[in-house]
Length: 76
Image 1: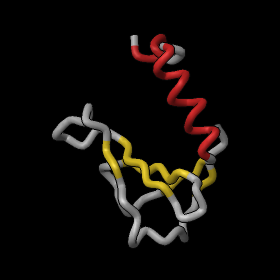
Image 2: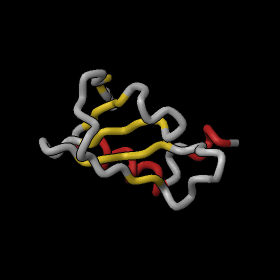
Image 3: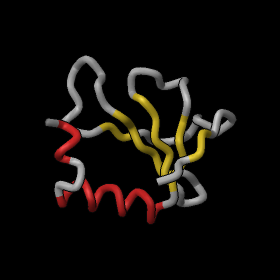
């Protein structure tokens, strides 16, 4: 994934979604679909901070890999 930081992205009107697995201390990322069909990702603890933008295909590849356990070794 080669997400690009988009400091000037219009944040108003975006519907950000946080994982149901997020915890009360805000340790999670949020995602929003952009009008272009791309996916914006931000740190939920810093909603005014950097936003990374990925194509739908990049996010599908990441989510698929996460479901398959490709990244489990990072969490041990």
